[in-house]
Image (cartoon, rainbow, N blue to C red; front, side, top):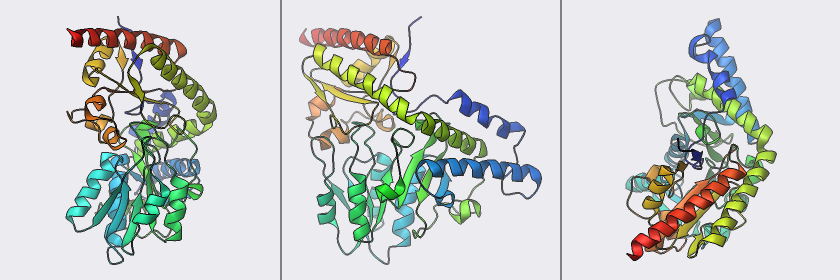
Length: 384
């Protein structure tokens, strides 16, 4: 039987057994609708609000500023559409970056079709946006700025606090997509100067199908979903109680383990990067060498197709990716890699390893041996 090593934690994470245990009662025993008045519903409501407290506490927010969604994609859509449509009399200009997740970029394209103007800021060779570029892009029509906290493909952590300070000075709403950072690195919404922040449970060992949007008190928004008064009239629909409970528990665990796991995973990340560069010629590290997520290793290997690498890795029991899971079916090179200046032919040879809590040093040793073996095999085939 082939040993399986999972190194695609940016795509999703296994649900923590403690999270599953916390969720189970709310499927059968405490299954009440939290909008009902009898005890079964009140029990579900109380547990849901306790989970909301945990999520809010983890980012330094108030509980009433957390709105549960179906995931990060809905949170991003809600942030952008909710703010722009509620404030279109004030202006019609949005600022974002060229390396955002498609949940932001596609929403921006949708808004452009509705008459809004969007400025897509460039980034440098490491994937960093310059705060001064944000300042220069602001007009008297700008109503929203959206910059991701850390890039899901190359792992670069953006200067969110500095951009947020500019947005605050200009009295412009500021949103950050923190799907890759919530539960992984420390977050405080006041220190980051953000008005809106997107999160997703399944990126931090919680269940799929649940996320949240932080909305700073006083932010003018309209809801995306209509039909009920749930979530303080901001998101209609019966709440996913088991999912919310799981999200809260996952965030609680992540907070308790963050400092230890962040250091442990970063050490393994650095070991993998060092090993790859020592043993493979023609390799390039994508993203910032220091200002990056503790678990992210994104590289390009010249003369090797990323898809061929992934198939060969899979046969050896290694789960990795060539970029975002949301675009894995696309034949086009990553928009993120192109934005940081990677040539198209080189971008096709991208590999992303994202480590997790269970990753061990022996796993890294095995991965290094296998990657070198596969690269040499593919190079030999290419030469023939």
